[in-house]
Image (tube, rainbow, N blue to C red):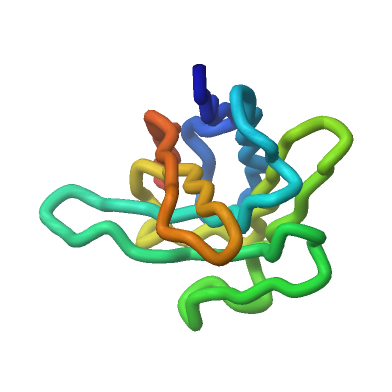
Length: 118
């Protein structure tokens, strides 16, 4: 059974930090490109960050470049999103996404809420 379980969300003040984790199971994690998406109320889901299957390359939305860092530990089947200098506009439900390299086979997690507010 495929599972992507996000954790680490919460309420943080502007300028603060959070580290999201996504624990994967039920598939060959090291063969999957991993991404974080987010969706705020009334908006479309947007891609935040992506990391290749080996972790050798990453990509970020312009809105989070220099503030967020995606990483993965293939031994632990886990992907992370370190979020620094958080802004109120970062408030959203954050989703973990897995896509098998070279295919369209993909999975979603259930999401973890991040709220940035004073």
